[in-house]
Image 1 (cartoon, one colour):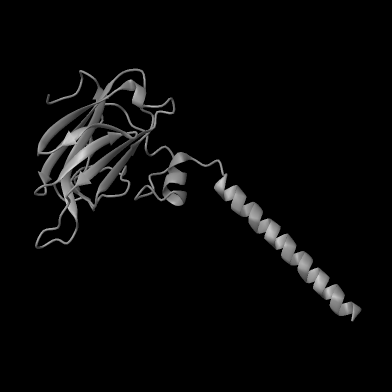
Image 2 (cartoon, rainbow, N blue to C red):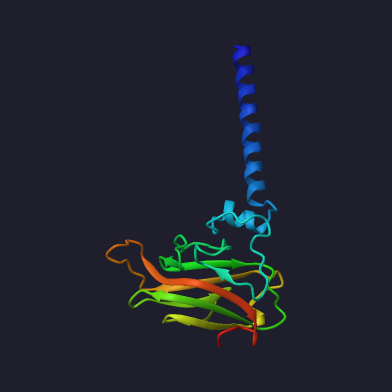
Length: 194
């Protein structure tokens, strides 16, 4: 009888220790101080591909290519992008996100996007760090002003394309919105192809 009681007490103690251990691991995983890219890919699941620590850093004026023939195709994809095609990449669904870090916040910037195609009736609102900065409703090169106050001291910038009326084609079941070839971020007045 005593042996059974002693065994039960030991089992309860071990169970309590394991519960405390698991609760501690869970707390540490939620409160972990991890690199931004690690958190975005592994924890928040906002990046499509692992870009490595510091992989979202951006140098103003650097082209970001969305075509597979590029020597340096973008890895900044969040949700809402299909695979890169020879000439560009389609957005899929109603939201397509891109992420940047190391963006200076000392002056206004211009976001430039080259759109090769747009599905019939589709258009996109362009949102920088949760603030609408314009709309894409046709093919060509579009410029959008990003006021310096939109970028925090951390230098993080999220560009979202809020796509309205995406649609599939007869041959492609993806819910596509617009086809992007390249983007740039640059200082106001230094953007190309005005």
